[in-house]
Length: 159
Image (cartoon, rainbow, N blue to C red; front, top):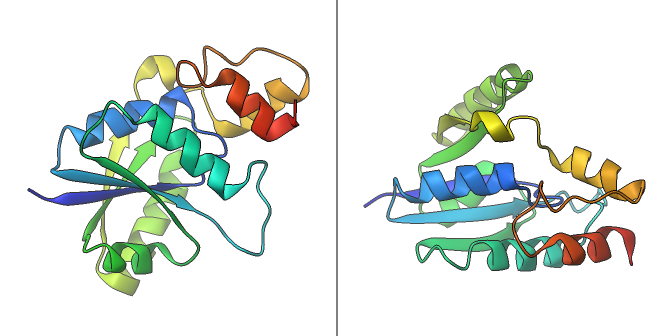
């Protein structure tokens, strides 16, 4: 069976991400979830924390592996023997930027992009919304994978 790559910053992982991960993992032999990071930019969470939290969130999925990658997506795909990536699309304007990235990734490395729509109930969730709510002391338990709210808050807010 084929391997797929699901790249993202996952800063932090959300229930929306998990929806795509669970659905995509059912379509392939192995799904590699890649925490993509730009070494020149600092995220809200350390890359190691993002990987650790994703591993916990994905522990119930035997065909999912989490990695970190600090380069081009096409290089990550090539290094892992992958020819197709999965991208989650929310109805909030994601399509145009995802379409452009898909074209560039095909041009640079022959990597195809499979776009998966997010489940309607999760479409408004984003990592930036989670970070904003946390910054004001709000609860994000309903937005992040079960059991990870405190660890995510600690990783972002240092509490």
